[in-house]
Length: 354
Image 1 (cartoon, helix red, strand yellow):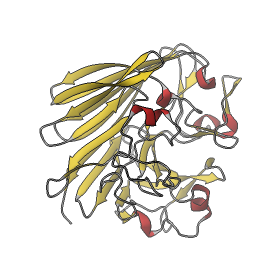
Image 2 (cartoon, one colour):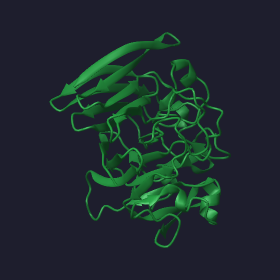
Image 3 (cartoon, helix red, strand yellow):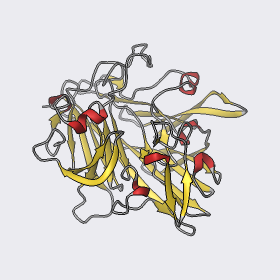
């Protein structure tokens, strides 16, 4: 295992670095302490050709511009909160409405626009980067001084592992995730519609306009949302469905089938037939948001100097359900004093033939 770092620039007076974790199998991950960004992930294909399979930019300056959370760490609260507010213990908290009248990914800043403290860490099977940040009481409208620690590991078994830890001095709500856009053909290589996706989920959370959950669940069987077996993403993405219309394609939360298990379970797998690249996703979270990159429109130019056009990358965001603070029947996202939050997501990579 190997760790390297280089100075990437400054934000205000704070130093930003790009850390590279690599193993002996030709796998490497680039992580920045600005926004906890996964700025790159390189792996070989069936023929041994290495490509970067994460959408991203070549410089820090490009990440400082407006972009749809390319590769960023998401917090304090990932996904949407309806009407930009929630109530906790009888107190109503107002947030920034940045998605119509709703809050998306905590507003216009969130964790993805902060400079985190960083330190290199090691364990016998992996090299890692540990990021830490104190979000002050009231930041982005959320209560409590929230101490957060996120560790990225690259293992010798070709896994990218993300561990999330947090504690607070006041009751609050949290929901962390990572917003990496994946294209197993290589970033800038075209759309992801031929990728074969499998989701370990028999239900999605039903949404209304604005992708806000109604609180109800839909069985995916015999619908365009059925990925219980490996299915090309493009097969049903343009089907007539009001739920697909709300998201301009797939941008929905699947309820992971845990079968009573509470720890790390498989949530998804993704396969690209031409390259043979295969990715499995495991998590302790109850849900996963599959977003098919429907709003990429070619205005962003990536590391390969090629535009990121519609559906040229996809996100598999392990998460709690959207708008959970406003739905008592959803798994709770409340964190209180003297509680320690922990969550873990693992992406396992390999190659295989048809």
